[in-house]
Image 1 (cartoon, rainbow, N blue to C red):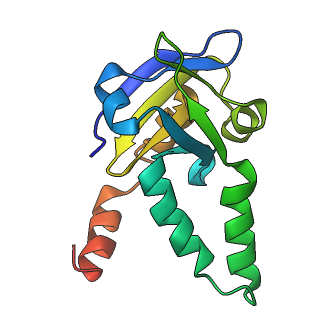
Image 2: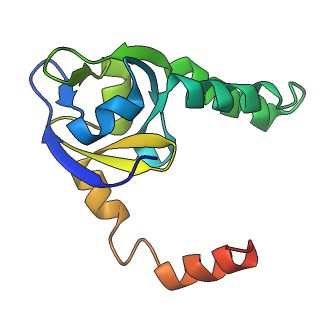
Length: 143
């Protein structure tokens, strides 16, 4: 399970260090793709295959389902770490997530998310998120 919040800089080539605590669970080869909220989703291969199976079951006749599947698959790329524990973030994914200099890597259960630091701060701004409202909605879902 991925948990935690880690801050790292991107180098000039667009590489970022994946924290050592997360590397073993991530595996040697993993999938990075466009994520929601202008972040990147990073899945270990097994979790990507689970997600892929769910996407494949969406109805081809649904316009929204086709758009959702295209969103994730069009940005997906297999990645691996170099000897220093860095991953190269492809330019199309850096553009999607507005990543330029400072990144935040967060653990979200079965995946990692990579955020531009400024976007992460904006996302967590009290004006953006009302945790009381979110808690109420989660209670409606039985959580």
